[in-house]
Structures are given as structure tokens and as C-alpha cells.
Length: 345
Ligand code: PHE
Image (cartoon, rainbow, N blue to C red; front, top):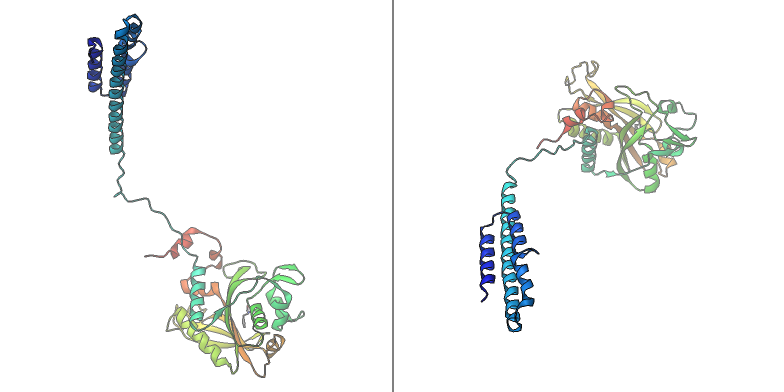
């Protein structure tokens, strides 16, 4: 660059840019050296007055000066931006060693904890898990279980009717009939957990909705000893080795003989206390040998096959297991209750 004026403008600009520390200083300088009212811009106006032979070199040098200055601006701007970014990042560093806010996990309803445990115990004994509808027909809920229309046992199992023949099942026993129908004369060993309904006034020990686990075994030479051994094993696995069971004679239209099964009271170990009302035993289920009429109605020859069945109240087992004092607690969704069953690990 030969033109002294241009040279001095460029060096002044570069000096200024070098010293500038802030973005607005840079902007101001850019205006001063490259703006419309800058010295460079007014020098440009001189070109017209120059002799032809000087015009070209002056034009070239003028452009060169502009380029040098713009490039210096560009570089400085980038450097300043980079510096600003670094400072920002430094200020905003996240302390990853800080403990995070606790995410509160829910707890399983003890009903499901117990239901799963019960299922596991029976699956371990070789039972399959069957299923059946909660909305049932009169046929499966009553008729095929030897409970005809005028049978007095119906009084104890009033329920919610959808129409005259469709109802919410009162027990899981209709799955007995459904399984026999499906298995068509072949041996059976199933359990069926599920919801059941009765027209009850809710209180601490009654709920219009509750749940049972049905059990059904049908084969040749099945006797009541098999029923007792199965339930004894269940009771010990569920409530502890020390528990004993006792079978009391009872009545169900679909079993003969029928039994009610009690376990020794965990609270007093069988001596008698408030919890077992002084008897030393607590009832946990009903069962019996499948009635020959039920076998016959559902396609099994009672001369060849025999079987046992039982129905266990799931909430009842959970209540005894955890010492819960009110069946409604399973359904009220009170987190203070549920959190007591949180898994501790
Ligand atoms: N279904 C009966 C009830 O709900 C229980 C039961 C099941 C009894 C199977 C005998 C055999 O009371």
C-alpha cells in the first residue's frame, strides 16, 4: 500500500480494534472506520477527481484497506464471542455431585402382594392359572354348581343383576364349570384368582366387592386327604411352618362333603384370644369334594372321576397376614396406608 493516508487509516483502525474489549466498542469502531461517514468513505469520493492513471491503483488500495479493516473486525468479534461463551459456561457449571431430588415411588397394594404370593404357592404345587368373566350368567354362577333357581343357598349370595340371567359373579366357583366344559372330561388342576361381588352393606369386614382364589382338582382317585394336604401346605407356606389347619364340616351345594378350613391363630398360637374370639382358630376358606351332580352336569362321570375344590378369600388372607383391621382399606387408596407396604431395599 503506497497511499499514506490509507496506510494511516488502516493502522489507526487496527490499533483501535486490538485495544477494544467490548462488543459495543467494536460496533462503534466499525461505524467510525467503515460507516457512511467514515474517512475511508469520503476518500472514496475523491477517486473521480484523480487522474486516470492513479484511479486504478487508488481503487485497488482502497479495497485492500477496507478488507484489512473488516477482517480485523471479524476476527476480533469472533474472539470476543468465544470469550463471552467461555465465561458464561464457567458461571453456569452444574454441580453433578449434588444429590438429586428424591423421586417418590409408589407401593403395591398389599392385596396384590398377597394375591401374587398365593398364586406362586399353588403354581409351585403344579396348578395352572385359569380365568373367567366377572359378568356371569345364572347358569355358570348357580345352575351348573347345583344351585337351582329356588335353592335357599341363593339367599346368601345376592348380587348385582344386569338382567334376569346376567349378574356379577358371587364367587369364583363358576370357573369350575367353565374349566370342566373346556377340559371336556380330561383331568384338571387349576386355580383362578379374581374379583367377586355380593350385595352386602360395606363395613370393616364386608365389602360388596372382594376377591377369591378358586381351586379345582379333578382326576381318578382324588380323595379328601388330597384336599387337606394341599391346604395344609398352602397354610404353612403362607403363614409359617408352625400353623396347623383344621377342617370343620360345612355345607355348600356344589361339594359333598363340604368343609370350612381354619388355621391356628397367629396372635395366640391356638390358646384363644380376642382376635380368634377365644377359639384359637381363624377361618380362612371353604372347600370340599366336588358334588357328583356337578361332575355329571359338566361332563365328568362321577363313577370314574372325583375331585376337590376350594375358595379362599384373598383379602381375608391379606388381613391375617398383615394385621389389617378394615377390608375397606384395600380399596380406599389412602397413600398413608399403602406406603406402609413400600418395598425397602
Ligand atoms: N364358592 C364358595 C364361597 O364363595 C367357596 C367354595 C369354593 C366352597 C369351592 C367349596 C368349593 O363361599
